[in-house]
Amino acid sequence: MKQQSGSEGIHIENAFNNSSGIAVGRGAQVGGLFEPRAVPPSQPGPLSSEAQSSPLSSSPSGARPLIMLFSHQDRPWLDRLRTHLALLAQQGLIALWDDSQIAAGADWQNAMAYSIAHSRFALLLVSANFLASPLIASYQLPLIHQRVAQEQLTLLPLLLSPCLYKESPLGNYQPCNPDLSLAQLSFAEQEEVLVNVARTIYQALY
Image 1: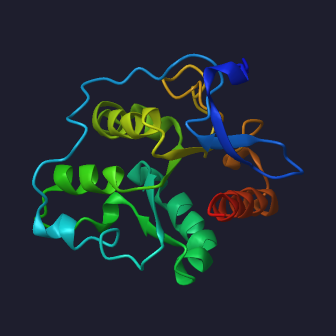
Image 2 (image 1 turned 45 degrees about the vertical axis):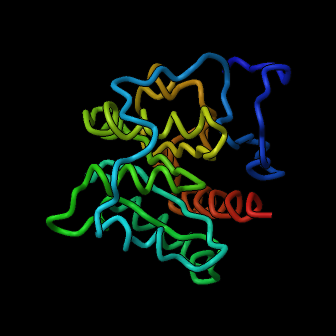
């Protein structure tokens, strides 16, 4: 991957792990820019009662909001990742959110915009399904990019399975596991990567 010079103001919050040496952080990039498409207004409109009462707005004081974007076809990976992040949530360090928590009948666009606007971390569970989703590409990622560009969001792409990640608009952002996707690893190696993701977030809190 191409490396960007430090003169361009890239702010790297933490190393992924001393043993892995993978840099991730607030908008950590490796060359180029992510071009947003059809970017909605940077601030969401009046909040619905569903958004106001979301887990992010009612999270414990001091908890850092964390949003997870994924294709619903990859839900098993989300569940495994939630398990590894559960301890941090139980300790009141982070507040987890994904769109499966949007209540029936709620304004999903408003809830999504609210959650992205108030998140401190964004975990992107990237796969071919993720990249093929029109909703993710045209709505969610532009909102994410706005927050990253404003240096208000730490972006953590996690490669679930082989896909055209490097060729995608996200390809300039260093993933947590750039060498092999989770699907290409043994179960024990997958667990190690997920632990390192949780540890990266934990270290970024301090």
